Amino acid sequence: MKKPTPPSRRRHLSKEDEALWEHTAETLEPIKGKKQRHVADTAEFDPDAVPPFTAKASAGKKSETHAPAGHGSKKAAHPAVPPPIPSVAPPALADFDRKAARRLRQGQVEIEARIDLHGMRQHEAHMALRRFLHSSFGKGLRWVLVITGKGGPRRPREDEDVGYSTPERGILRRNVPVWLAEPELRTIVVSYTTAAISHGGEGAIYIQLRNPGRVR
Image (tube, rainbow, N blue to C red):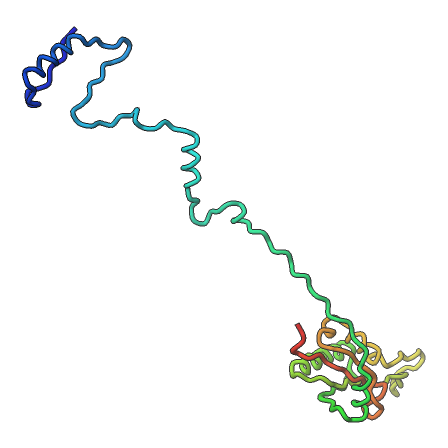
């Protein structure tokens, strides 16, 4: 067996140390099946010193990985859609206050605005009524008058053929209450009632509008 080379002189070993080294080297035997490792004078990278890969360590790194900007989890990418807010139906028309009706008929309460639908076609009267009521409501008015006309059998013109029955008039007097009961107008109309004779009688109605501050 080749003797190990003793440390160089630059380590400043004494003669006793050199003799001890030579004696120790003669008694050393290499381990079978393994290569002899020599320790370098300077520190070197030792792969055995690196901790082995474990699933736990891998999971820890994975948990620390940040997702790229703009890419979140499925829950973040597809947020839950809030349920639709149920629409609240407007309240039904109420009975007209008797005291208010009496005061209107006696002139103690001022009629703040009025519209005459008499002579209009149905679609024209419907549109005019809606515009009038919304405009009055927007101005904060409370008491308005709508003139519909009493109606009755229509008299034929002189140049008309009267060999067929003439249609009954008064369609607006019947339709205005129906239009007032529509959801759009119920949101601003409280109630209505027949007007006094001085204001048109059965051919006109008083309408009470809601207080704009209480409408949601």
